[in-house]
Length: 111
Image (cartoon, rainbow, N blue to C red; front, side, top):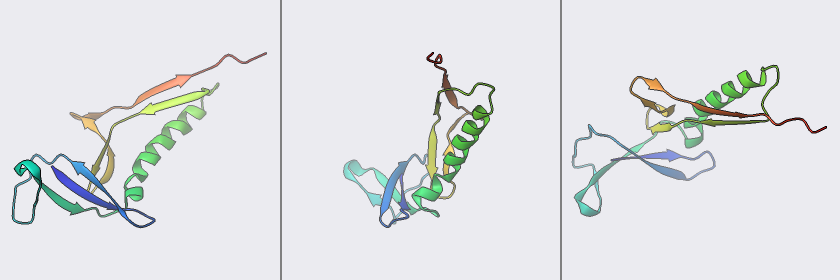
């Protein structure tokens, strides 16, 4: 496991645990209970800046759906988010594809 420290825009920090299967243990690692090792890495961007790409994805989906002849009353978008120290937040992919689950709801107009 690798721990990534993301600074916050308003001060402070948030620690995020990420899987790192290729991680080799060295003297700079933090040892936790059970002899498991984690490495603390400081992210290049703030936590909020790391989430900007996710905001762009959500905004893009909403803008496209708003252009429908009859836009839905509700939109539900679900996707996995993966955080890394260098890339920030990315839409998590399985294999070579990333998936978005989009739910749309139309209500009958009340007359």
